[in-house]
Structure formats: C-alpha cells, structure tokens
Length: 256
Image (tube, rainbow, N blue to C red; front, side, top):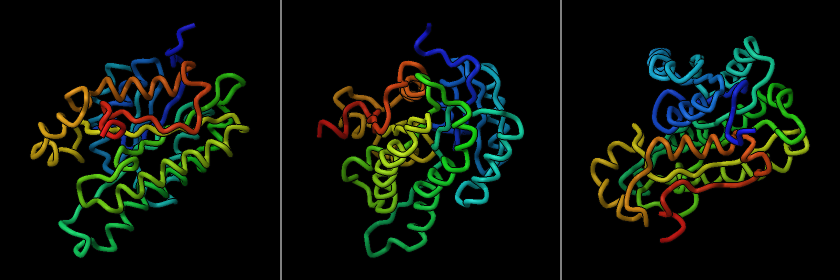
C-alpha cells in the first residue's frame, strides 16, 4: 500500500483559505482526501475553493471559530454531510504585536488565546464523534494542531500572547494525545517557522533576508514543506506518531 495515500479520507482544515492552512489543504487534496475548509469570510472560502478545486473535492463552510458555539456549528455542518472525519487540522489562528510590554492591551490576550488555544480544544471536542467513527485499529483518526516555533523559543518580536498561546497549544497536544489515543485518535502538532502568509507578510517584507539567513538551509518555508508534513501525519506513514510537536522551520528554533 502507498504509505501516503489518503484516498477516501475526509479532512477538515480550519483557517484553510490562505497561508499555511491553504498549503495543508492542497497537500491533503493531492493525496486523495476530500477536504472541508473553514474561515470567517464566505468570500475567502469561495476563493479558496476555486483555487483548490483542480486538486480534488473541496467545500467551504464559513465559521467564526473564536466562539465555542461556532466550533460546534461547524462540526454539525460537517456531520450533516459526512459520517466520519479522518483528519482535523486546527490551523485557524491570530497574532498581535505591540512596541513594548507597556503598550500590550488586554484585548490582545483575549483575541489570541480564544482563537489559538481555546478553539482547537473546542473543535476537537465537537468533532470527537466523527473522529471516533473514523478511527480503525492501525489507522487512527488524526488531529493536527498548528503551533509555531515561537512556542518553542523566545521570539524576537513583542508578541506575548501569540508565543504563549502556541506553547500552551503544544502542551495541550500532548494532553489530548494521552486521553484520545485509547479512543483511536492521534494528536500531534506542527510548529512552522517563517512561511509566506498574510500573517507573516509585513515581517517578511521588512526582515525576510535576515530571517532566511537564520535557517541552516538559508530560506523560508515553501508550500510543499507544509503540505508534506500534514500528509505524513494524516497518512499510514504517521499512524504510530502521537503527542509529537514537529518543527518545520529549516532548523531555526533547534539550532540557534
């Protein structure tokens, strides 16, 4: 059998209409999965469907995942169409920067922690029936949380709530891996470094060359780098991996 074949599998990718989520959605589609993408704006979802449709069957279900009731609604909407979900990618996220600690507002904690940390928990819980229905002996269902290398090392930017929320998401990944393994579900996280995305656009424009130089590989991430790691974790190849946090950063966080 093909270790990386996802034919017949169903995947849900939050924040799947741009950036890293779009990269992952494309990889899952190319490996054979049917993919549901979700983001707040319906027009962004329509644009993503138009871009991704050449690679396979993809649908958009808009939702504001910063609220628990919307996480529940998304799971219900998928359940109306599918009996199982084999792969849940918790990618929707936000960041917030300020010039200094004195200028960092409380709203920057609420917005970032709600979306980056609480939503992956609420979504995983809401999708549990569909994930448990998909898990088989030797081929469990998969949850992939998108963390960040900023949760592995101290970032250079003043993004206090972002880096803290991602470090917490990495630990939540391990907690859920222990609890959900016996229920036929693996839970892993990827910790991306710099990739071209809307969230990173301003930083890369200002410091792109300097950031690339920090990697032993001398470049920032490319779409195939993110597609490859999610296909690995979602496929037979990654079926015995759980509770892991995998840096995908060209070595930035682990060699400096």
